Length: 268
Ligand code: GRF
Image (cartoon, protein in one colour):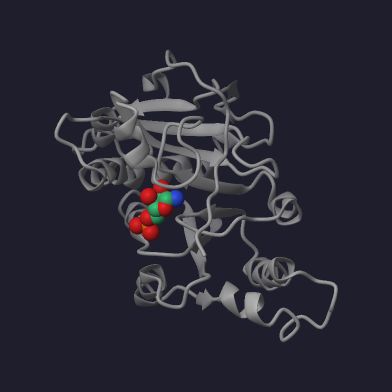
């Protein structure tokens, strides 16, 4: 049976696009059954609609301005009211997993607990480094030799959920935040489909404390891949150029240290 996926986003939707393309190209037993944005103009909504996927916008700003307009409960905060509608919409889609892909709202512990541990996020840094926004500029300012992205389980404690996988990219001497972001996104577009494939293939056991892949507890960095290593493989672990050899799992580099973190950031 195919894994039902709901994607939450606020922007462009290039990760959504990569997920959809990889599901189709590599027969990942998953289906994106709904895409929800908190921003009406999000490019990701158009991508979803073009693919015939249920797409909904729940504009958080309506709740900020008129907390009671949609929520009869006068006690409810705008954020709680927004989240109530959001979770009702998500739950109606009956997802097996909810993927945050550039969803720029902080989520309350109640919301997170409702989906835990089946709520994942992709963050543009090698967590626990550079939580929050402007990760590429901060990596450059600090002179980091490497940078990357992480897929992690979202937990109520901000930036504290276990990491499932990371992609590492080199930082070049002539990089600016845009060029670095582009390289990191190349990695993101390979990393998120890989993690989804693990989950859809039943190889990943998610937890708020630890993650297991093929029954093995993952290190605090999760599975760590270099960009070229990830580029050479399909999300299901075969070589990308039509060769059927196996497998991603022994190829992660476990040597880098780090602490488990989830991350979620918000812009108004
Ligand atoms: C990605 O860089 C992701 O790491 C961050 O938000 C961005 C979303 O980009 N959480 P896109 O909308 O998928 O292009």
